[in-house]
Length: 531
Image (cartoon, rainbow, N blue to C red; front, side, top):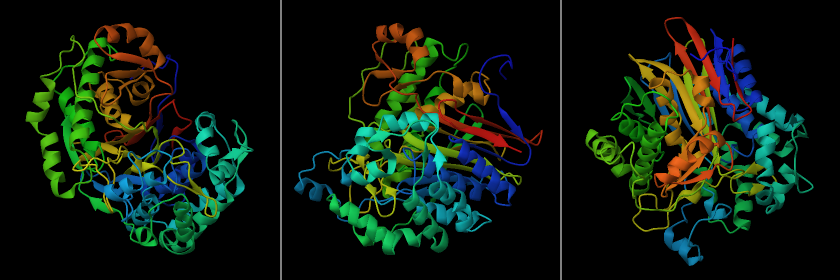
């Protein structure tokens, strides 16, 4: 536990319920829903719906969603895959015929059918206590009546101005006469409010069929999209079996592929072959973490995609002791950078993560994303929906496990997680930051379990990230100043991170004391609250 005299945020502590999100309005929404009789599922969905309004560059109903759910703190965890699928007409051949050689992040072909609304509806219907309309009311009110722009949202908006200016509807919704809204300015989204109201009244079907779906389809077709009404009408997520692995005596649970949770577990499996001690930011510790991540992301590029028939075998291989031993044997903590095959990876950094625990110790770990900042930048002016660009991660290489195909889900970077011990969940947690998340999970847990830091102190430490397929290491300012020259000497190409790397939220369930402890990353606007 950190010395209280150190500067920085305090941990939150409570008894009856707790929420941690990256935006204060979302955290407050979750707490309000819990205090009004909703459970952790209701609160998590209500919170992330609010974030789709007040943090629109990172998430929204035009994106995708994944969730892990523990009932009563049981380690028998439920997982839901709310990833959207490519249009039936989207194939390598059809895109090649259109002259598409690579799916650009602002291309309509990067827009898969959004899966978030279906996931929210299914989770609330199956596991919530309230109806969807009640859960969405806080988001509807903020979209209709307005909200104040927070500092991190203003920062992200400034970096997305050109993307939003390129689309008339997006510019009208999110900019003020072509300029970014500033911190403290009020903003409203009345058309999004109307869409949320329709979903609240009639369920997800209001989004995937009828007037709203037709308006979205018209927008996508105007931009040359291959989408159809049937693509929207057939949208459906699925319950999946979580995957897990042991790390430092705890069990870490993730969603299975098409997400990269297995890569987070692989990094932890490799780190388990080393003793990481002393300074958590010591150069040899960081070297091992960098190389473990580089090796794991190389495996991600080679093996990972939406391949149900081969999925179980792929997971078994990636999580095998033999594979972890092979990768760990290649790492010299004091050596030079490994010579690994290069590959092209898509930069994607924008996501929101929510965790909630209620009085019955139901725990939810939920993540929702537009992929890039403000997604594709394509908005439907009629419905107020901003479309994600998750399909940008598809490969156009025939035979690649992540090659685009009709109705296929792209490889996903967003990964909610939970930790359990002795058959009970002890911590739902998540790390934001696109493809950083797999390394981020391992980096965060290592600081807790290898170095004994509390959650808030672990989140506050400076971060670095080895960009997949390269020797480039992006480092936040403090690490750049401390270790940049030594990392260069070891063969890495070190760069200053252009933006804060990721973000995180976590809630610990202290079963012995009967309390909840929460933490929220200072890189974001949010907070952890409980009562």
